[in-house]
Length: 323
Image (cartoon, rainbow, N blue to C red; front, side, top):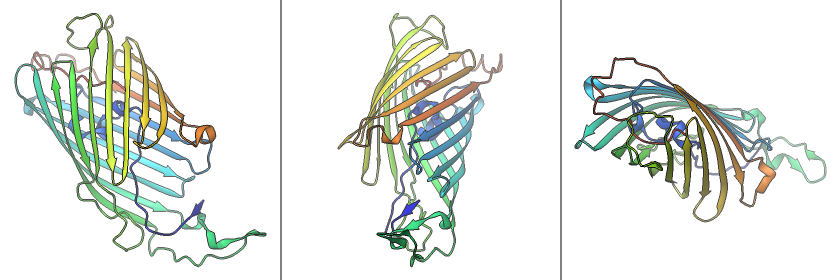
């Protein structure tokens, strides 16, 4: 892997199946399914390149009706450049559901995270090691960091508003304290604050009122997500078509100045299990050289039987998409 020196600023890993990784999208979504929920995510970005990005995630969350709260725990590992840079961590989440009236709710959530990054310095090559004719022949004069591992503590917060089982919208702020994440003690490298705004609706094509999953329901769900981190901005908008047990999705991703990708999704959900596959079709100047991105999600909600029924008589899950 070739490296250039200078000040660098990291950006977070991103997922195309936003709602299949709800605790990563917004901490206020902890416990949003009401029943205990387990999710697993895998993303391979730019598989045709050696310097690809592979991200793994897993999380568990559940709602606690006795205190109107949700709790969750999540794990994530991100590998860049064939493992030259590896980061991973664990997060603990808490959310509180505030009932405004019979049809409107607001969820508030917070997240505390511990992350550790590791740099494989010996796998890096620098510009001063190359001879125009002979290739890689010189020793670098770059000074390695005193430590090739870095640990940080991070905090996030968010809120989600829901109206009936029709409309939802939220905002999340990650890296509130903007911790330093550089391997050099220069105080210039930091994890910049990331702001996420997301909103959508669930439109029932049969114009019926449902409580919970119904296998004869057909819905269309338009959605939009905007994210900003330092000078990087990204907007995603798309639509889901849900006819149980299948979900079809199509998204368009734009970085405000240039088109990036079209995302195609196929999902399957039956009873407590759901599975999703999406592919990012690159439409930027990189075109097909990167191989796009493959993403897989797997989710399972646990059947709580009659445990919550009496308490959930007038309580619906947040009507966000499955993927």
